[in-house]
Amino acid sequence: MNKRLYRSDKDKFLGGVCAGLGDYFGIDPTVVRLIFVLLTIFGGSAVLIYIILWMITPVEPTASQDVV
Image (cartoon, rainbow, N blue to C red; front, top):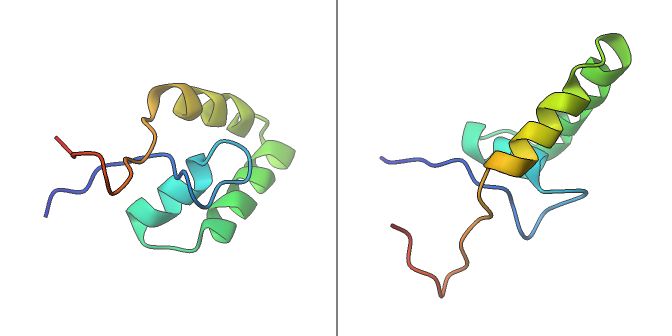
């Protein structure tokens, strides 16, 4: 099975990064969002990680687009 990490276009709150990570790892996107919030509060580096992932992760292709 060839899994790829995409930003979610359907279940997004800000950029779709957390929803994409949740889909990729098979967990609820709310859990991923909570992890990012906790990392931001206690470490501060989660904002930088989120922005980097937002820039480098492609948007999830729609059903009409071909996946390469």
